[in-house]
Every structure is written in C-alpha cells, then in structure tokens.
Image (cartoon, rainbow, N blue to C red; front, side, top):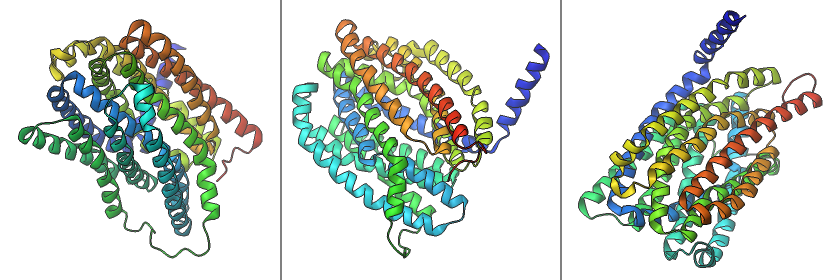
Length: 443
C-alpha cells in the first residue's frame, strides 16, 4: 500500500511539474528572482544609509501608499483580469474593449474619491492615531498610490493575455530601475526618507507604459458601440467584494506599522520593516505562481478541472515549509550581512515574520479558485476576519511585548487566514456543485 501511494504521489508530482502552469510560473519566476535580488540590493543600500530610525519613517510613509493603492483600485484589477482573461479566451475583442472603457471610468472615480478622503483624514491620522510627525510624507503617499496602481494594471493586462514573459520583464525591470536610481543618488547626493519615497512611488508607473507597448492590440481607442453599463456592473459584481477584501486587507497590512509607531519608536519600526522585507522573499517566490494561476483559473470551464488543479497545489505547502526553515536558520547571518549591527533586533522578528509569510505563500494559490467560481464575496469575509483579529491582537501584544508582539500577531493572523481560506474554498466548491450538478462553471 505504501509503495502504491508513493508511486501515485510521484506521478502527480511529475504531472504538476510538466503542466503549463508550472512552465509559465517558471518564466514569471525568473522575473521575480531578478526583482527579489534588485529589491534586496535596494533595501541594503537604503537601510544602511538611513539607519533604523529614518528607515522607520520611510517605511511608515511607504506603507501608507501600499495601503491606499488597493483602496483606489477597489477590486477592479482582479475583476478586470478575470473577465478579460475569459473574453480573450473566447476571442471576443469587443467585450475586451468595453471592459477597458468601463474599467477606466470606474478607476477615475475611485482614485478621486479615495484621494480626497485620505487627504482629509491624513492630519488626524498622523497626529492622533500614529503619532507620526512627517505629515507631508503621508500626503505624498496618496499620489504615489496611483503609480503603484498603474503597475498592477500593467501586470493585469499582460496576465489576462497570458503574456508571462512580459510580466517577468515588468516585474524585474521596475525593480532594476529602482536599484539603479537609488545607487546613483546614494553615490552623488545621499539619501533621505523623502527622496527614497519619491523613487519608490514614481517608477512603478513605467510598468503600465511597457505593457501598453507590448499589447498594442488592446482596444483603448477602438470605437465601442453602445454603452458599457453591463461591463461596469460585471466589474463591480466580482470586483466589489474583492475590493472589500482589498480595503480590509490594506487596513490590516498597515496596522502593524502604524501601531508600532504609536507605541514604540521609529527605530523599532525600522527593524520590523527591514525584517519584513527579508521575510517577504517567501511571498516573492509565490507571486509568479499566483499571477499564472489567476489567469488560468479564470478560464476553467468545469468544477472537475478546478478540483484537479487544487489537488496539485498541496505540494506548495511543502515548498512553503522549506522556505520558512531556510529563513529561520539564516536569520542571524542575513541580518548582519545585509543590514549591519544596528539592526540586530530584527533577527527574532525575521524568524517570526517568516512563519507568517510561509502561510501567505501556501494560502495565495488557493484563492485563485474564486476566480474560476466567479465568487468574490468569500474574499471579503477573509478580509473582515483579518481585520477583526489583527487589531485586537496588536492592541494586546504590542503594549505587552513590544515589536516582537507585532510579529507574533502577524504570524497568528496569517495562520488563521490560511485555515479560513481552505474552508471557504471547499465550501464554495460544494455550493457550486449543488447549484449546478453538471459541474459547468458560469461565464
């Protein structure tokens, strides 16, 4: 019996490794590997130049931009990816054109609305909640969030057309350009939190420009007969719930930096942010998998195909565990080598944060099932659960244990999210089968 199971496991492993998803993931992974190395080089220069306190200031401001960006998008990019991938697979250029027009209209509205709200609340947020003295940097983050959004749009368009080599170019090119600019500035005029923030937030817009040069057939300017009310509705039906997840996740992802800044000092924020950047290497490894799988899952036509696809993802939990073990063992050497002795406090933080990012690695590909099912409401439930757990966890653990308490709260949060994602994926597959016994997925 054991021998038969071993042979079955090896057979499934060989099939998984030979699948188009794995091959395309390998292509995107090459770009992500270059991005990871370039980002690491940039982080080393920035952390050593600024020191823990100034790096903490920069990290709080950059964190605001990365939190605002998904709020401005409000689920439109993942929704565009799903519907555009299905339209492209069906060869429907007209539908693609209408989706692009509807997307542009909605994105302008969300950008203006979120930007206005953030600018209005940034002052009280900085003074009363975060105890952050650099209000101008927070306000720069609002404009920079649009640039981050444009990079995501460029990737989404390429992924929808399954142009994964170009996805790799966008991913690596942006990071390499940032590395070059930071190196030049460090050599000539020195770095400050404001200068580094400007570089990080300005360059991502180039990702969209590259995507447009590679996808000249995207029908932005093509005449579209009739209105696009239906396409707006389609984008919002799927994207609206994904947008709720994005909003809640953005709040959750920024809570740790904001509350560490409130209850600790800027140097603690800097050590935490530096440790998170190293731990995020695990997530960087999962991004090519996720970018390929979202587009593939969106085009699945049957539940049987989706379930066979999910069965192969079990191997990723093993990969995640190996990654966590490697980061845990290498943490002291990595921190000393990359950041220097000023960041010694980051070693235990890196180990605990790596556990959390390991769960994120394992969780992400399973969420692609909702693209196949066309169900985004469970994503909002995951986001709500994150926020309801993370805020009280931080409020209890950070005052008691300091910055390491924030790291433990993060690890516990990601473990909870992983378990919840598995439960929701299985329950929604069962619900889809009950509603449609034929197993055919709706368009």
